[in-house]
Length: 417
Image (cartoon, rainbow, N blue to C red; front, side, top):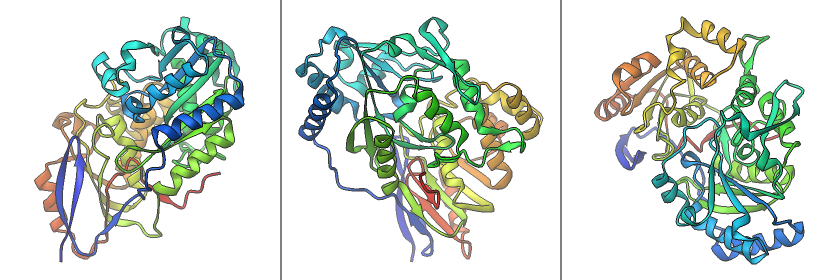
């Protein structure tokens, strides 16, 4: 008897009939904990504990690729700040683009709500060296360059969703300060720690959900000591990308608590790998472009046995999402790509290298709006929806799994340290 499942693709869903023996791998969907009243109460409690100085309040938030129900909860945060004595003219919100391209005003209005029209928002520009103050260098050689207005803020708040990150361990939290509000060359140096130059490979310790021993994550932890957030709001998301809890606190232990809570719902325990894995990247905005979708592809690849097939649904209406990604595929193979990155890490080179490594181990078939020529250049097999369904009909004795939202799903064991 066939199983039926609906998978997200952009703003639509696609229906699939699955073999009876296919495993459906789902993240848990805990009941919603947070309410507007509870969020307000948690904020009040933290503000009173911290005895905050509201002379220059800075709030770092994520862009459209990492939404956190901002339209609902930003107004409460801002209202509560003013209740506690902050003046509206002394509050600035910074969109932590990192090296991402800035989004349009209409997109910002949709994501952040009406507060976008009534408060001061700053679109971070990582290439403008006038924005930064240099504070030192990490033991791994990353220059610590932080926005001077962030460094000088009397009260710094980070507000964003916790997520697994395919080489930094976790996204959100401290990443909303660096690389989110970092300087371009410093960001690239940190990202370059993804490469194990001595072993001539990608670092095996740069994995989703891994902090201890992860050189990139430990570098971020060192950078954080130069200007930690005074308060952090960590969003915990369900499988639909909606906030089901908001943890309000400060310090590294608070960050670890949020990571652990994210793990509780998003780790999938399975001892076996599969011959065939069908995934959705989670729909829009998680499949808004290929750079964002790659994170889901990377997570899902851990479920696929060597030589197996990964079938991916990712619409990518914004295309690749970067001008620095495709040129890496014009080089003569993986080794030349690695050697060039090892000398000078730039752009999305690590993402390109990670994608090429996966293509050398498994077969990747993608339903997408990305053009045929671009698909061939990257090296994956572009297929139609009907072709993806035809592939499933050929699955008989092969082991198979479906992952409903691979952007959130991480295979265990990979324990948080």
